Length: 140
Ligand code: CMP
Image (cartoon, rainbow, N blue to C red; front, side, top):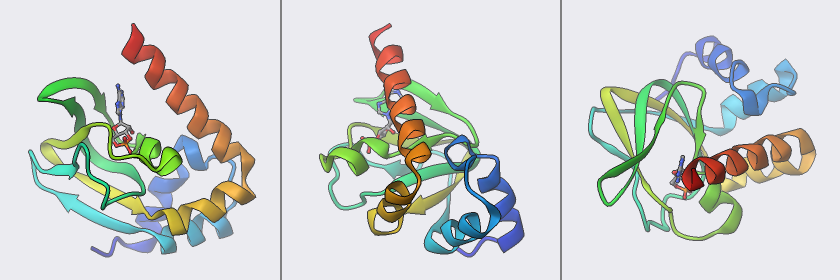
């Protein structure tokens, strides 16, 4: 689905992961991805899948991270997910399921995202922080 350019840019500008990027690069990021609207209960990402790799950003709505139907985390707009398979090329570690109002999600393929990581080390640090936080929360 095509999201109006300025609305998408505004939303991406508020995402922590992209906070160090100037407007030109952010426009490039917006142009490289695709936005999907998922109805409530839809599986945005499926555990064990290897076919839908790439990073996802929740733009609107909510989503839950689930393993065998058990909720491990709840995601809010601005949250990034799908970073694990993107980084280690392993199958998806969990289901991510759209919440009761549905979920609008921006998707970046590895092909679109990897060059950004190469050019912007701050993004790699932010992704690593996200991973570390998730490990801590999972261990807690
Ligand atoms: P990935 O494994 O690519 O696909 C499922 C995603 O769910 C995963 O990346 C993370 O982004 C997210 N995820 C998995 N486990 C947790 C967790 N315990 N807490 C928060 N998010 C998680």
